[in-house]
Image 1 (spheres, one colour):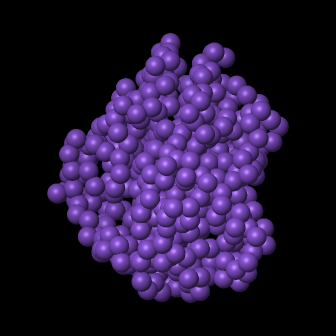
Image 2: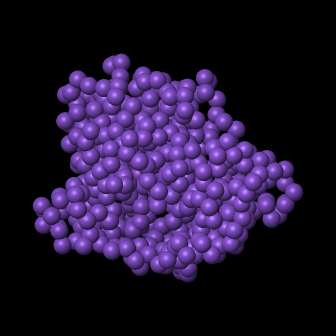
Image 3: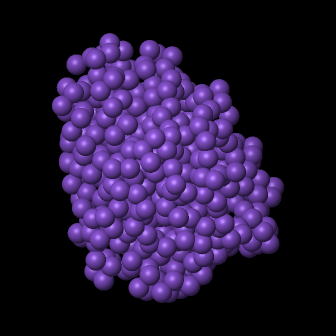
Amino acid sequence: MTAHPNILVILTDQQRSDSLGSVGWTGIKTPHLDRLAASGVHFTGAVCESPECVPARATILTGLPPHLSGVHSNSTTLRSGEWTFPRALRDAGYRTWAIGKQHFRPHRADHGFDRLVLGEPKATQDDDYLDFLDEHGFGWVDEPWGVRSDSYYIPQPSQLPDSHHITTWTGDRTIALLGESAPANAPFLGMVGFLKPHPPFDPTVPFARLYDPEIVPPPIDAGGQLDPFPVEVAQRFMKWREETSPALAQTLRAHYLGSVTQVDVQIGRILEAVDSLGLAERTVIVFLSDHGELLGDHGLWGKRSYLRGSCEIPLIICDPTRASSDPIADQIASQCDLAPTILAAAGCPIPPHLPGRDLLSAVESPPPSGLTGTYAAGPLGVVSRLTTRWRWSYSVAAGRERLFDLAADPNETNNLAIAEPDHPELVTSRCAVIAELSVSGDRLGMLDGKVLARSSDEAVRALFGRNRQRGRR
């Protein structure tokens, strides 16, 4: 056992917390993630502070939520040179590398990694995955990440064979870098970014046919009886999903699960490589996703929502250097906790500016009573209070709020803000969020003095046009 263990972080994109066989829908095939969960700690109460790619990934790297970091949506960026846990580990002598989708802007920004092997969606140049396809005769595929634009949420078998799909490429490159890292004297930090199951849902055969659409569990409240927030309506429009037939919804969900299982196969190969290279006893493995996917629940698709399909994420930590007596932890956990947990595992000091805690030292660091989550800023903003029992959220556009009792209403179909407008938890949540945003100087512009701001939904509609993304050319 080394004093400074290796750290391997496996990050998927847009994976729901209930898409694991061990805790999710009956019939989901994720045997390798299930094995990892059984050997570590599975945090079933994990959430993301911001349910969108760039802010969620910035939170993971910096340990700061959006209202402290300022990275609040995909339109904002984490500046090169900011404190990140990879930079802290590199300064402590770790060799650091990242593979696959990282969603940095610019493409190869320095956030603490010595080496970047990138496969980014919508990339046009300086991309390792596109170079790989060109070298192997698949440069003609214009959208190798799946056909986007008006087909963004159309189930589609991949145009590529499994050997050249971005999921397999990510697994291959990870195994290669593990092989290079194993003989070295210095410990390594590896960040593995799988693009999938982010849409388009384009698994290869046989994964595209692995799940029968007729027996996949249907969406919760598929008719959308819950009144959606303006941003949820707008992103549904953007994704060409104002109307989705039950048959198409089931096929989309089946292809989504096929993508999940396809990723699980590659994670299994990575775990096998860790074992065969003799790294298992000195490597901390963290598995998580940046955010979830609504997948038709409440008639909605995508993320940018604090409904549980969007904001609840899988989180597994396997640390062979620190034993845990509880393989399943239902306490609240978040992406802000990743940096402190990883630094503690590496034997590095935890900076005092980080609000999170070391998740594997629960006795010394008891869970907070709740967390504040934010998406976007100003009129587009949505803010949430996240606890293990209550889920409150507020949309600045139109000034509407929701409150769910997750113990009594796990499917979030009864909005207590409407059913019980005098419910005491409404006041508790509002006050907690206003206090949190005030302390940070309201840098996201969600307050109007000492109350939550309110605006029309015009700005939201203007920012979400039809999805007409182009391919690599």
